[in-house]
Each structure stands twice: as C-alpha cells, then as structure tokens.
Length: 240
Image (cartoon, rainbow, N blue to C red; front, top):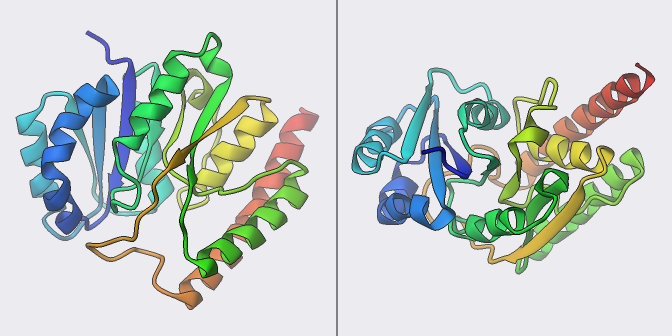
C-alpha cells in the first residue's frame, strides 16, 4: 500500500529534540496520511540509536543514514529521493515548527484539483525583530535578483508533488535548498500557497548554524554567492 504523503525530517545531532518528540513522531504518520523519513545526517551523538527505536515502533517510519554530514540540503534530497509518496515535503527537527503543521500542507495538495501545479509552504507568525529585519533584507535581495516576489524563504514545512521534485537538477547541499525549491517553483509557474504556522524558539539542542549575528552574516554571504550561481544556472537553462 503506497503512502500518499512523505515527510522528510533531517536530523543532525538532535538526540535531545528526538527524545522530547518521540511520542509525537510515532503518531505523526497516521496524521499526515503517509510515511515519515528521518534522515540521520552524519550525527555523532545518539541520534541514530533513537531513530532506530522509532522505526521499530512504527513501520511507516523509515530511516536514511548518511555517514558524513555534507549539508542540510543534501540530507533532505537523500530523503526526497527515496520517498514513496505522491506528495513530499520537509521540515526541521529542531521543534521550532510543530511537525503536525505539515498535515495542513499535505491537505492543501490532496484537495487541489491540480496538485502538480502547487507549491505549499509555511508562513511564520511571531518572530524576533532581529530575525524579521534579517529576513526582510534577504527577501528584498532575492526578489530583486530573481525578478519575482520571494519572502519568508526558509519557512517550514515545504510541500510539493513528487513530479515537481523529479524535475530538479543539481539542488544545493546546504541551507540554500529552501531558496532553490522556492525559486524553481516560481520559475515553473507553480501556484505558491502559504499557510500560517506557529513558530517557536528552539528549546533543546544546538543549531548547526544559527548561533548569533556572526553566523547570520556568514550565512547571508554564502546565500548571496549561491543566489548568483543559481541565477546564472537558471538563465543558462532558459537558453537551451
């Protein structure tokens, strides 16, 4: 029996969050009407052990182990590749977005007469002022560069048809994956549907990138470089 939906959650050293979310993750498959793919993205703590326990408790929970963490995007793409669902998506393991928010996103696709033409993503509500300013700056830059309105680029979850994913070529291995998917959906003229999500503070574990102003500046520089690279590759593809 093929699952309708596949939700991917990349996990890098997320033992504390996984222990905290254990019971919720076990029941999540029935709520999203499908399978859960938990990607162990080269963790060096006991993430793998906890993931194995989860998969033993629920056959709809599948584990993808990656030996070496080469990036957030790579982990997600590895999960998307093995997804059996008609509709696929991803969210973070850090608990800032409740995993059950994904049920709303999958429903939007399931109920749409043209799901292949739909790209669904979360829309964050309450956020710190510093984060809002940072996000606004990136949104303006990306919107000008790609000549299309892009905002709340990194909001989770992101959900789409497997058919759309199958058109991807060379997705990035890092945090730019959110931008790549969003820009591509716009370029392919998919209808972008956003739904409100409750965005919380990370309570447990340590973010692998977001630990202060310096890390945000570094990520911005990296994203700007990648954005130009993505812009050129889309431009070259259009010429073909």
